Amino acid sequence: MLVDNNLGVTSRTDVVVVGAGPTGLALACGLLAAGVPVHVFDWAAGPAGTSRALGLQPRGAEVIDRLGALGDLPERSIEIRQVAVHINGRHAASLRVGQRTTLVTRAGLLLSQAEIEAQLRHRLADLGGRVEWGAGVVNVEQDARGVTVELGGGATTRSEWIVGCDGAHSAVRKAASIGFPGVPLVERFLLADVHADLPIPRDTVSVWLQGAGLIGAFPLPGEDLWRLMAPAPEDGAPEGGAPGSRGDGETVALLARVLEERSGLAAASVRDAEWTSRFRFHRRLAETYRRGRILLAGDAAHIHSPFGGQGMNTGLGDAENLAWKLALVATGRAQPALLDTYEAERRPIATGVLATTSSMTGLILGDTTLARLVRDHAVVPLLNRPRIQRLIWEQTSQLKINYRRGPLGQGARIPGTRGPRPGDRIPDLACRHADGRHTRLHAELGSRWALLGPGKSDACAAVARRHLGEHGVTVLAPSGDPAREVLLVRPDGHLGWRGGPAPDGLDRWLSEILGR
Image 1 (cartoon, rainbow, N blue to C red):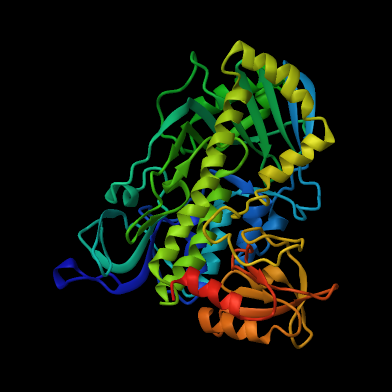
Image 2 (image 1 turned 90 degrees about the vertical axis):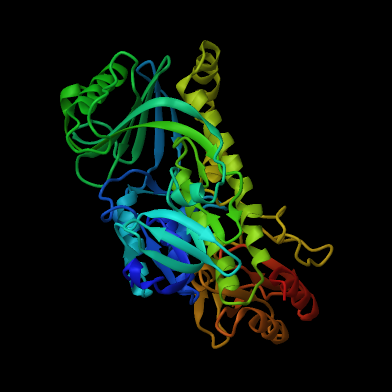
């Protein structure tokens, strides 16, 4: 509980998480599940009710599932089957998404960010945590033993670690004097969640391109709810009104007019709005993700164009990667140097996302006449090809992410054998416990590691539990083909170590990465 600042410092927690968006909530859930006390602060007066980011890519849904927070989100979402692209009013391509492939075995989910946050808050409460609303961070100061966090109103709290998940204008990042260089990509973009009678399929995202103009229509859960997005025309962008308001009729009228001009759908089919916003696209990347006891995740560390639906999902990946590492450090099982591997693994992912989404934005919006020609006559027609569709879907799913080149990707591997390399994501294998109970690999992860191996892997299991905790490791046998090697799978589903049943190699690897 916070106390009056005149009485001294407030109660101590191991980790303070600033920001109760998807990244901060996922991180807090991961830490609490691992037994680490967490206090979550957010400057807002209460939970957001607006949709903002839309949906979960398969990787994002997988992360939330491992946290035990997925619940009925799939049933409440819309499964998108295709993206229909029109050029100058004519249908030009149908990009199939959501199909099952060898890599992607679950669909992406289109639903409100507010719904995702609510589900994560429920999970946080189940784990014994809560959000302290109306608690903005004013300043952060660190010393050799911890961090002092000053909140609005003069209250303070003391923590061993603090993670800024507080968005593009992060107070934590600014207090740590971490640079956030970048450039604007689009000056003004309009968005509105509207009630509309649109005669287009509700399993489809529809996009209309015309020269440098664009408008997109995204179906939202609800009988007649749609999100409309378009660049603001230079001659008609509204200047007044508060972004994020419910009553910005000028923005809705402008989007309805652009929809009619680009698609031929009647502007009168668009009725009242649930939410409107006007914003800029920026591309920015924090100079570092860690400064001593201060760390950054999500939009506090990287922001980019929303094209491709990568933002929220990248933040969830940050949270999961950081949670298990910070939990080991906070519980004394690893030295703080392990936290340096968080930036080493996740910052290259953000760099790639920034590059991809920036290129996609320039291509879709057609910055030049040449770019529009290439888009209309070369790129868009390629979207009809099944191989291209599969490549795009698998890439945007984020399931191809691996950490092979990271500092933890150098685990032991038996020469001459095939299979996953350290750093690779391990699929959700069918497994069984020692007592014969059947399970899935990813259902056992989240706050624990998994040791997969043959029956003679007891010595490896003992080593893993000595390093990671008696309850920090679950021992499983893959169903089907008998295992010939031992695999130690990280809580985030990536392979940590691979080798024979003799425990010496595993002991050396864990001692090295944990610094113990």
